[in-house]
Image (cartoon, rainbow, N blue to C red; front, top):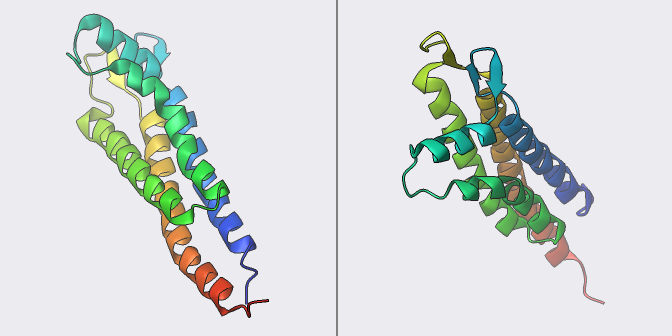
Length: 154
């Protein structure tokens, strides 16, 4: 039988790895414009200045690193299932965002502006790892609960 303390640690490591991958992916190139690679935050700033996003608060995108830390933080506080739910939501957003950008058109462009796959792929993979972390957490949290409940009370 596994130690009930190491199981959540393994789930936390997978969850943290997924979160870090998402954050790193946002700083990798998403678009190449001429000879300049632009990451997600630069794109958000350009879109905001051009008025492309309308009333959508682009500043909320800058809270993404904090949101990525939320699942791991909840798990570190022993809120395993809450952390797993936060992981599932963040994973869905990351997988959708990375996949949507890739579907829009990697390699397509006007010649001077084109989508590059490095950032979106890293974010989507981070989302998949985060999804795996959520599944592992849900599975292990029920096992941990059974082990803790089976202990004789002192």
